[in-house]
Length: 329
Image (cartoon, rainbow, N blue to C red; front, side, top):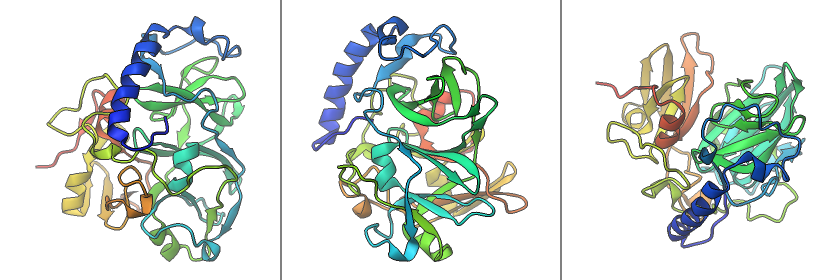
């Protein structure tokens, strides 16, 4: 969540050490009450407050977007063909692409698609891109970025009750709504070229009116670094690199390298396909020039898209410690 300039790996390590020393000592709800007077810290799923750290920016220091503008696919000329976008296709609505070049700097987009209020989210430190239905039993929520991390994953907050939500699992972990879960929608990440080819009449989110280096990757080299940023938990088993990508469906995870080799894997009730052509958002300083990690689609036996996430292995293991690793063989 912090924005770094080169050399990034050195700054990740130095900043992590400094933040860790400060935030562990301050990991107490009383120290947060002034900034979060409307958050009910007496109601939480957290057993150890030291798990929650500051990512650097304060509350709303990373500004979430609300009701963004869109332009036609044919009118977009700035996005590189291999750049990743999160695709939202909802029945009755024109397909929409949410470019990672914008989500890297904003992390949450509150929007409404085909009458469905959605939150399109991306946590760079976990490579986790998930779209949630904002409708809940407490009403329609809108979300902002808290500036906090847990297991290196973004902690969101809702503006209605200021409860804190864990992005990777879509669950409120602190506050009035603690324990409530958001519905995850079956959206996916693919290249801009893939989206355009399938949806020539589609829409793409317009560039936000913020002074940001859109298209640049402030986390240059992160997904090939040895350790995750601000993470002190257990590393993944089976010799899997903590920053290797895995495809999570429910509580199961398929290593991306296995899928890249096989291209199509059908098991556990789903078919997962991999195709080349999508750039990593966390490699080169310019996203469009990053290495190819490919695109994933997950479908059920009827060919319907299935909600999933392509995240780093350490984050999967942190939030699903008893999950099933689909290693094949």
